[in-house]
Structure formats: structure tokens, C-alpha cells
Image (cartoon, rainbow, N blue to C red; front, top):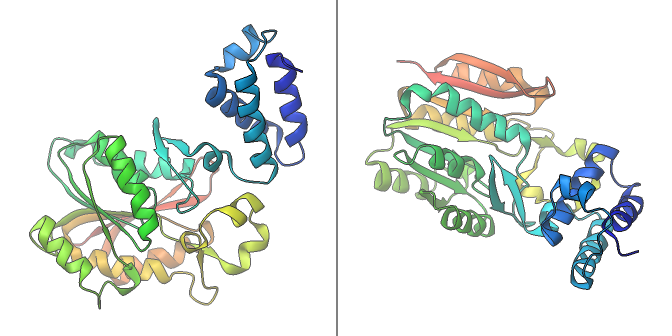
Length: 299
């Protein structure tokens, strides 16, 4: 088997027990794009062509890792997000379509401010996909982002350099932002004050430990648990600190936008209300699940 079509079919047969048909087709296509620079149309128009030994070797190496349940994004070392190629590794979460929806919501919601220099902070940044995407769309915004993981920040900094965005990254545990100095010191240094932010964004950990059994093994075995899970007894632990930090750091009328666990929307909304936020909006994702919340700090 050396033709494009033969190897494409064999690929799908080897992985059919691991993926649903639509996802399987996407993964196979990505492997061929990576190894052979083939588009979807090429797979049809060039189906009878012979692949080079080098391409076949590359495809087989990828197949071996995919059969071990490693996500295609980690196998290739990158993931597409907002039409940009982001470096990823098992030290960061793979960017999700739902998070793209959050970024688009922010960009559309703040369109009237696109020519104004806003001060922005992203929390639990991971690969940096949220702040970097905001920076690429609004080069004049002053944007900072933090994460507890030094390895995750290494990836974010690389993405910042490769994509030529302008985000200032720093290490901070947001669960300890009140006691540690890194948050207040960095905000003062970059923004000139600790309470003049216009926007805070975050996609923090929100999956309960008891939900592990429902998590796909590709996620469970390969993506960083520190970026996924929260204690069952305190499912809103990150949102509590985000709401308090946002209340302390945003200017009057500033906004916070967060991605949430669909089962805890009411609890997150209540936290923001208690921290003097209003104009709280709950937005569903493409699958009609409650997924994002925007809140405005009262004047």
C-alpha cells in the first residue's frame, strides 16, 4: 500500500476504534497535511499518486503515537486557534473551539474600543492562546498574562515570539494572589497601578475530580491535570479568586470574561454579584451549553 488513497483508508481502519467518524477524518487529514502538504481536495484529486518513502515513514510514526491515544496536536507539536498555529505540548491544554468563542465574544463585544489602548490581564493562560489572539487583533492594547506553571509559560512565550504578538507573561499562582507579591508588583510595573485594568479574561481549571470517569483518555492521559481539575468540595475555587482579583484590579466599568463549567453557571454568577459586579451575561457555546460569563464592575 503506497498510494494516497490506500494509506488514507488504512489509517482510518487502524484508528476507527478510537475516534468517531467525523473526528477520525479530521485527524487523518491533519496527518496528511503535516507530512505531505495535502489539502482535502488533494486527497481526492491525487488519490492514485504514490507517496514517497519519507512521507510514508512520517505517517507511520504519527500513526504509532495516535494508536497510543496521544492527541494529534501533541504529536504534531501545534494546534490551530483563531487561524493561527500555536505551539503546544503536554505542559499546556490543547486550545478548544469553545475558547475561540470566548475570544470572539470579547473582540465583538469590545469592537467599539478597538482603537483605544486597553489594559488587559489573562489568568491561567496556558499556551497563551487567549491573550496572544487579543494582541494580534489589537496591537495597541497593553496585555499581560500569567500562569502557575513555568513550563506552560515557556510555551506561551515561544508562541508570543513566533506569532509576533506583544504579551507580557509572568508567573503567578492566582489562588495566592493576595499573599504573594508577584501579582501586585507586576501590575504596578506594567500598568502603573493595581486597579486600572479594563479587561480580565480567564479559562481556569473547572473540571471536578469526580468527572474524571467521563473524560476521554486522550485528555486524561496526556493533558496537564493542573490545568483541568478542581476539588469536588470546592468547584468554584478559581472563580472565587478571579472575582475578588477582578473587583480589586479593574477600573469602574471594567469587565471580566471567563469560561465556565456548564453545571456551575449559577454559582459563578453569584460570586460576581457578591463582588459588586452587574450586567452579568451568560452565553452558551456552539453546543448550546452554558460556557461563558461576562460581568461589569459597578461604577
